[in-house]
Each structure stands twice: as structure tokens, then as C-alpha cells.
Length: 88
Image (cartoon, rainbow, N blue to C red; front, side, top):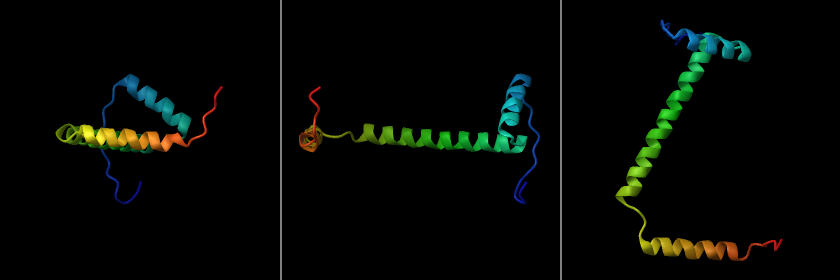
């Protein structure tokens, strides 16, 4: 453990602990490393979901206009017009 680590006590359901132990043994991690990795991933997922919620709220507050949609379609057609297409 690094100097900045804190020791805590955690209670887990027996079946969850058994599954975690099997994973820990398979990966060769310590319990602390496994739980730290799991918490980091959970926190990253939570942060990502908050960002998605903010994006959706911002879009709903100010969706694109029909003019912007038309311009985007025009640009998309122009972008793919020169691509080589297989006629198979």
C-alpha cells in the first residue's frame, strides 16, 4: 500500500465475496488492488453517465435547427459523393 492509502473494513455478501475471490485469484491481484480497480471503474462510469446526462440536457435545451440539419445533410452528401463505391 502506498503512504496515502487508508485502511477500511468492508462487509460483503458471501456470494459476492466468493466471486471476487475467484476473480482475484485469476488476476493475481490482492483484495485491495481488486477493490481499488473496481471502485475506479465504477467512479469512471458514474462520471461518464453524468456527462451523458449533461449532454442530453444541453441538446434538449438547444436542439439543432431545421436549417442546421439541412446543411449537415448537404455536407454529408458532398463528403460521400467522391467515395469509390463497389457495385457488387
